[in-house]
Amino acid sequence: MRWSAVIRGVAVVSAAMLAAAPVHAEDEKDSAPETWFARMLGRNESQLTVTHFWSLGAKMRAETVVAGQLIVTIVNGDTYYTYSPSGGGGLAVERAPQAIADDAKMGRPFGQEVELLLDQGAEKVGEEMLHGRMCDVYRVTDSDGKRQVWATQGEPRVTSRIEVFRRASGSTQYLDYDQWLRGVPIADGFFEPHGGLELKRYSLSDYLVEATRDGTLGAIQFLHLLTGRSKQPTGAGASSGS
Image 1 (tube, rainbow, N blue to C red):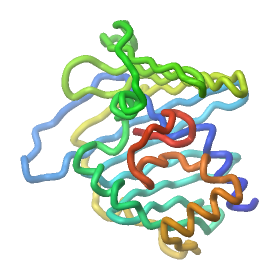
Image 2 (cartoon, one colour):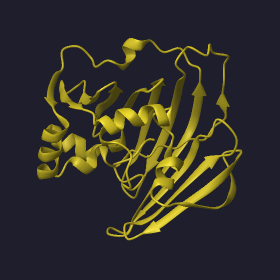
Image 3 (cartoon, one colour):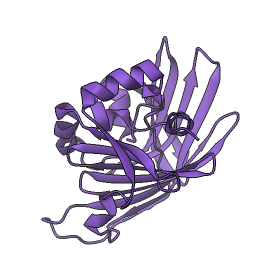
Image 4 (cartoon, rainbow, N blue to C red):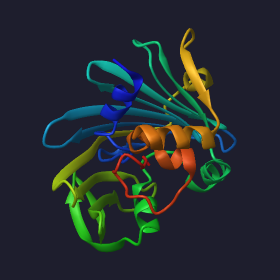
């Protein structure tokens, strides 16, 4: 299977991650980077996907099975990696300075969909009990469609659900986090790619040109972690996670 075909499959999951179950916190030293784990269930009219997320400070690792292949995404410093361990290949792309600067503002690199939606002009439209926790509901509607995020009240705020309606296709995507854990032990080496991979390395500008030409840019799961926060639609293969 060509890498471009695999990466298109990842688009179903999109960069929108959701959060739900109670957050379990542990005492941590102020100087130690905060760690998180979350699990996301994604579904649309044709697919069901499960994605696992880990973070250590601004570093992130996400794993999703697409078309029988494990797809790993790692964000570490100035590099964005996405690859298939079973396929043995993938990409290593230079991150934009804006994306690196956003790391300090965003804190946890996933589960920040409210902030991303507010960038697009979203407003709070109500409150709702979801997965046993009271959530604030945010919504934005525009020419692309309608996007809603349910986020838990209080701190730390985590995403519980994302719903994305795409006007062009008439399709709706649902994303739910069913587990959140905080303070889990994670080794720094977990945020490095597997050994023995054939990674094609790109500068950001070269990658954007090639991906736009091939039509694979929209399939990048967490585009804002590559290019920086913008007005791009949450859950459209261009969000976070965040």
